[in-house]
Length: 253
Image 1: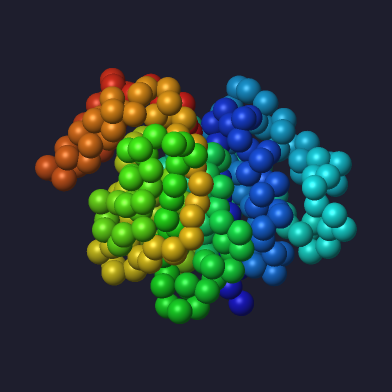
Image 2: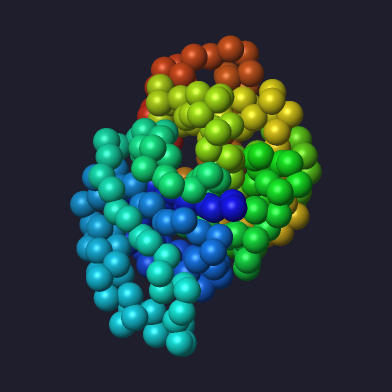
């Protein structure tokens, strides 16, 4: 039987983590979800407190869920890691019991019945993939950028679309490259495309435009394009990391 381990890297996600966990519990089934693993990279806000409270007092903190049955049994784990999304997600994968890994950012809300959609693709022989994505924004460029994610092109991929992959394939391709503090999702996706193992599920995941809001759409998009071009030209992880640290003040884990 196929089971999904949801892995969420966090760093100061108090504004998003509770909403996401409630959504996951409301829109998935115990028979499909092995556990939800939150890997915290050293939050100094209320992220860990919110997660711990949810674990211990779930019924009180989830008033919108009536007559919980199997959903109530989904295990939520909080583990601690060094900062760095690649390190955090790799650690979560080591703890995972499911045979399907689902990597999800804390500010991204997957579609209803995401678990059934993912398992359906794996059962069809698609061992990896993502959802198409739209930003929670009315900005015309972000709407176009979101629309482009429905296409199968590798250039249209990114971590905000979330990522599912069978645990066996994840281990075979070498997991996330921990040298990257930026571009770790794209590096993994490139490996999967080389294996000809990638499908885009044509349902929407909704993600926050917070980085664009913080830096300005065009300024941030310029830096993202710059990073893509540098990688295409052969730049190593440290070169991309240095550029990212110099030009982009990151508020995500």
